[in-house]
Each structure stands twice: as structure tokens, then as C-alpha cells.
Image (cartoon, rainbow, N blue to C red; front, side, top):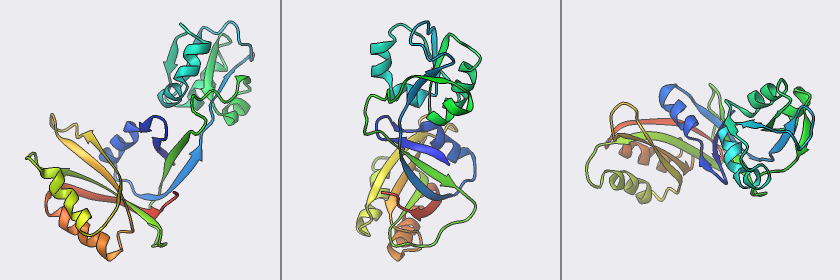
Length: 221
């Protein structure tokens, strides 16, 4: 299960980049309400010299941190779990992590619910080998690149409009293969086995330098 976007901070670029590097298939999506907590070995609000967490929770708690711990270095970690594990060995440090991490690494809460916006959700994608069948309320994700010419992206998108397919999201990322070349990621309503979705993707494929369907799966929205 990998995070793909947050309702406060937007897309998780690292996850998009992994789709470019690895052959992955999306089998499902999950929406989770996210709550962040500040914790340490002692649970004391005083004596904190460093705060660790993943960059996404740091960004989602930026206002609270500036108000409550101004001037304290906030350092990025590979994950909130890694931050909690490190803090378990550093009494003068704190971590932004989950209640589960506090339980696993025997940490005490300094403050619960420190996210700046309480209506804070993260969309996760479930990666699996198998692809689910149609449910009637599905979503399909594709990635593609287009030729570098005026109107290239418009030419692609008009096929979805023609077949009355609603694109719920489109993002771009540098391809990392050539300067100023981009890979586009698009989510659309419908399953790839739906006739109109299949027709649109087949038409688009003829105009793309590259196109890959990353999966069709039940919509969690």
C-alpha cells in the first residue's frame, strides 16, 4: 500500500516516480483520515532539540510546529516509523508519527492531533499482481508521454471528452530521461473493460510516444 496524494499537500511525487521505474499494477485505492502526533521517549514538552518525521507529515503540521517549536530543527526521515525508531534512542528528540509507532517503540505523547487541518485525508493505492473485475464504480489510471509540439496534450485529452469520460486527476512528472520531457499520470472514471474507456485509450495510444495502463480498480470516493 503506497500513498499517492494528500488532501492538504497534494500528490506524493516519490510514488509517481516509482511507477516510472517499476512495473506495478494498481488493484485498489483506500482513503484514510490522517492524524499526526508528537512523541518522545519522555513525553516532556521541554528539552526537545530536534524533531524527525517524513516530509509529508512535516508539511501537514508546519503551522503547529512554527507556533509551538519555533527555531527547533525539523529533519526529514524515510518514514514516520523510522523517525519514531530513531527518537526511541535520542531522549532530546521528538517524532511526528502514529499511535501505532508510539506503541511499538515505547514512546510517550507530547501532543496528539497536531495536523494543521483536521479534515486531512490521504489516498493510498494498493499494489498487487491481480487485477479486479468491473464493479460499476471503478477508476482507471494511465501514464503516458506526448510529442513535444503545440497542442499535443489537448489532442490527447479531447479523446476522453469525445467519449464523455471524466478525468478526475492529471499530474505531470519529469521523465528523467531527457531535459524538459514529461510523463503524465491521469485518473479517469470507468474500468478499462468498459467499451468507451477502451476506445478512448486505444485512440490516445496512437498519438502518444508511450502509454501504459497502471490498473482499473474500485473507486473509494
